[in-house]
Length: 473
Image 1 (cartoon, rainbow, N blue to C red):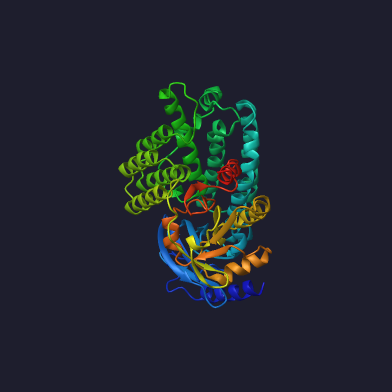
Image 2: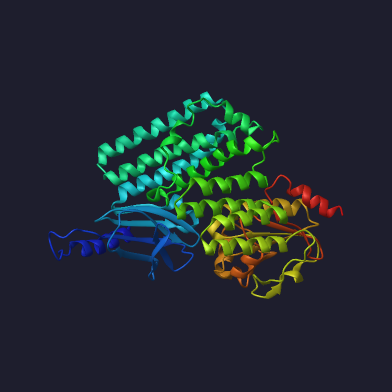
């Protein structure tokens, strides 16, 4: 409360000053906030993937920033590995408060423009919770499924209409929120064949009502105004995958569909290239799907085929370089390869070579404060695995680069043991060499430090089968 009172007084000082010209157009807005448990000493503000400024936090982890020559719309603020959006319009003075340990759930806005942004975050969190419900609904017939998601859309529309009636928001906000409702609904339609329990996805797709995808004729697959918004980009990914399923089925000669097949993924990259003309949106979709495929594959030939197709179609040189290095790193971690030499720092601040701590079959996993839920779940899972497989060594490495004290404090907060816990001396280099994506990536090595599986996952149903095979050698 003290924070908000002091911040409001500060804003009054800004906004209470006389305008240079009473008739001048107000083309600026203020954004400020306080970050609890900050990961870095700054916040990055951007719009449409263009960085506006890097704003330093003060001694109390707060900031206040004036955006001049405001172009109203969705802005992103990033801190550490997390980001969230804020809708800014002229004369807004939006303040927020958040805790990095519970980023989205702790985020609260105040000040002028806060009501629309609190509503926006509330709908974002509701959409996250709704995803699990949608998975269950997808097991229904297409007709019954549509009735349920129609009901969800109607409920959202009614709630939004009540908000509009009470608060009279701008046309920009109303258009944006209506698009949010629509694209959330459309996404639910697009994921249906993939989440339905039936194995023959092409047949499931053929079984839906004739008008199930009628909305597609009105979709803009190149909407720059929404390209920075989660629900729109999620819809595009689902829709592209679904449309590819139709095209892939036409030449798959009756083979069972597999989402990880090279042929299907090549078809998807080709469809994106032909369907999406906006360069930024196209590059984003191409990168996401290529990275997803590569992160699941250990096949060098297939990886090269997907990478080659991606490089032909993308115009983002930085992303192309990143994925080329990623593929090289994956290839260097194939079965039988020697684990790369990397320097670790133990929790007693001693430097050790990664190879020097491997004296028996080992499982190497990673964590980051940027993926807090994974940190908690993975350490709980590791407790179980350590008891179950004492013959294995479980090495856990923090990849943040924030230093020992912060990661030790987090481990202590959950009573997690530090034994076999380390940090990378050079995390950026290590992340690149070990192809560190996604954060669930786990590397299994034998007692000589040779890779058994460079792309495993302690939560995978095949993980225990893999380690038992290693122990029974």
